[in-house]
View 1 (tube, rainbow, N blue to C red):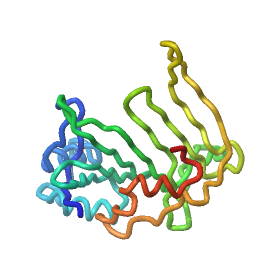
View 2 (cartoon, helix red, strand yellow; view 1 turned 90 degrees about the horizontal axis):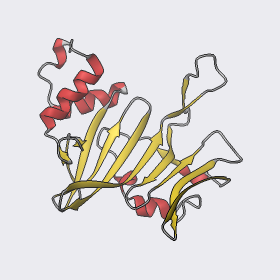
View 3 (cartoon, rainbow, N blue to C red; view 1 turned 135 degrees about the vertical axis):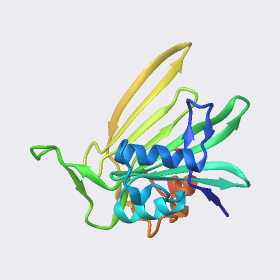
View 4 (cartoon, one colour; view 1 turned 60 degrees about the horizontal axis):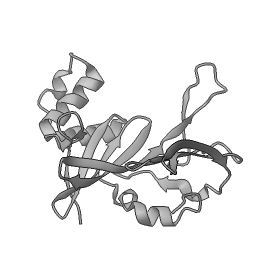
Length: 203
């Protein structure tokens, strides 16, 4: 159903999908700075993705549907984020993004340390609807009450207002299996089917 490239989206370069080679250079620079270890000097973009997945480092995959960019998955140490695209006359636009956390920030610890989930799951923690007035919804895995926060702009008679509110919802269906390999994201890509199963996500 999908084809893939190990390439990332870049808004500043004209809202395009970069080449795999440029994406790899950026990832290696982010990880190692100017001193990239010799073992990675000639690594291929796909081999880096395999290595990064096994060692919980950052890598990127763009999925194509009907030969058009559909979504880009960024797998980092802390989370997995997905950006969804639509083609416009002036470039490739992100209209939706989702974020799945691999753990949570322990605010009770001295260093506010990151605590990985111990159930081999990831947690849908954020949805951003982009375009128009936009909306951000945050979900908190460690809370039972006030575990959903919505932030959106609304317009009434030409007046734009920021509306922020907390709510409480059943987040039991926000847990998803951790990808089994560096390409295992199809279950997360069908966001419409995913949202339909979540009572906490408004239509």
